[in-house]
Length: 160
Image (cartoon, rainbow, N blue to C red; front, side, top):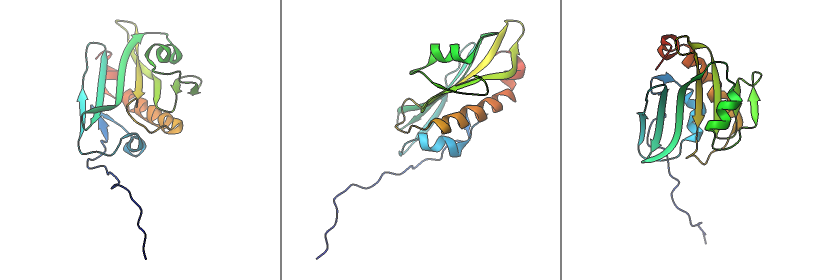
């Protein structure tokens, strides 16, 4: 006699994990665990003056955002995290240049300065719609994403 267990089919990801978020290269291997199973992924650029907001939805549910935002020059990543965080990102890297938790991270670019408006470019990544929590992955994501932003036209143009 054979007994079989009851259980539903395990859902799978039927979409490709993006390698860019609104034109900025992202480490798709590190991003993938934050994205759930589902049928359709949509990446939308919701940019406005002074900020680039990139929203990632899976099956019409907001899962992940990647932001680039110009803020007053001379600030600190901890201040940005305190104002923009859904939580309190208690971990830091590179002497506070990056702040992160298990599902969100904040970074300060190097060399991305708007001299006319006296602003610097910051990066923000939030996986608020994801069930996955991994501080080390968020740290890797924010560091690699920020380095890509530093190579971007947004950085060198001085404004979005």
